Image 1 (spheres, helix red, strand yellow):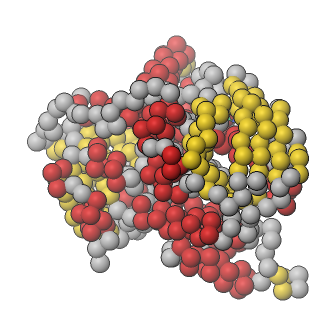
Image 2: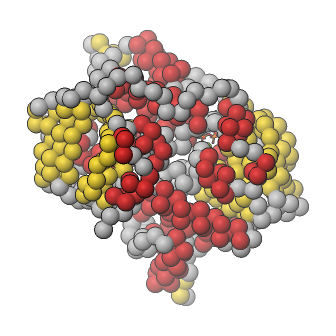
Image 3: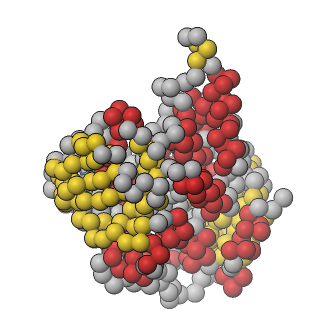
Length: 491
Ligand SMILES: Nc1ncnc2c1ncn2[C@@H]1O[C@H](COP(=O)(O)OP(=O)(O)OP(=O)(O)O)[C@@H](O)[C@H]1O
Ligand SMILES: [Mg+2]
């Protein structure tokens, strides 16, 4: 037994995040932790890493008992962690981040050369090209996640806890992650793995523990269960169909036309989105999907090209101008573009519609409350009340608040960049319903997603990018993972 949790309880105002949870982690196993958004997964692992102290219970690591841990003791006991929210310093290089606080030295001077060589060695295992000297702030979320993983690996932990490590990765990069997990396991490292992606849970884990509403429901052998049973245990209710049927036909009218858009990654991109259409945008990390979204949303400048909305040329220079044109972006990086962590749920949602719900410079509080309550029920934002600061919400519930915020602007074009990242299986279906409602009422959706099933399940058409260029376009009847991958990795 590597780690034992005995009767752990953690309370927050209005929430019992963990309710008398007991759990054993066997040495050398890959133990998956699953459950809906807000079930208590991150809270559970934070008690193991010393990030928080439980109100009750005991933690036993390799026979040694603790009523609570500090990050220092936890690390000294061989526990390493990759948190759901990044802990990287944007202003430092990749190598500096990996070796933060334990850099190799020559005398008293940091041995930069050695640090960068060591970092490069770790990346070789992933088969991923990251320059160890690059500033972390310049990397996209996907690459930042890979830096987090490299950092945890470099600590040579005996137990490595990973909280949704694959969430910001595309399928291809996720494959490298799986290989790393398998290698770690082969070398005797114990792994606790949190994820909402069921395929990888089945692929990687030996045992699975299901949490629901802070309680442990069951620990099962992966080989003795199946997807349906697992989902049933997680959500405790009947699930609707994952990709709900759409009841309308896409109109022939074009809503948005993009011609020859060029930025720093995207080159000469042209595409059209029709009214009532979901256009999927596929590609690998770094293929320019996010940049294209950010250009349309006025967050990044284009160096060439035209954008036409309902026949009118537009050139949004700021998100504010884009919103005024009826464009909204649900961003992949919720900290950069989306969330006001220290503001409550109501405030986060209403910030994008202040003008509409204000009279004589005063916010109509009742209207604000109504809008927030509406989304709270429609996409199940799990919270004791709408005054909760969103930094206190679970990762998936923060994402839901951001979605609500942008939908509240009542846009004609919604760009979703990885909309269901970190969203649990039950809530995904609700977000898909929302997308359907949008297009059924004549709005259009541009959907960027690294989850193949999701792009294929939701899009009417898919455009594929490779190194900034459009390499292919597929109609719904021609969708297949192979076809998309062929375009996405075209040379
Ligand atoms: N610092 C905090 N203050 C108040 N409530 C908190 C705090 N941290 C977590 N919670 C609450 O505890 C519950 C469990 O949250 P936790 O982050 O563990 O969920 P999770 O299972 O990791 O969910 P997700 O899949 O969305 O990441 C949630 O209801 C959350 O809002
Ligand atoms: Mg979490």
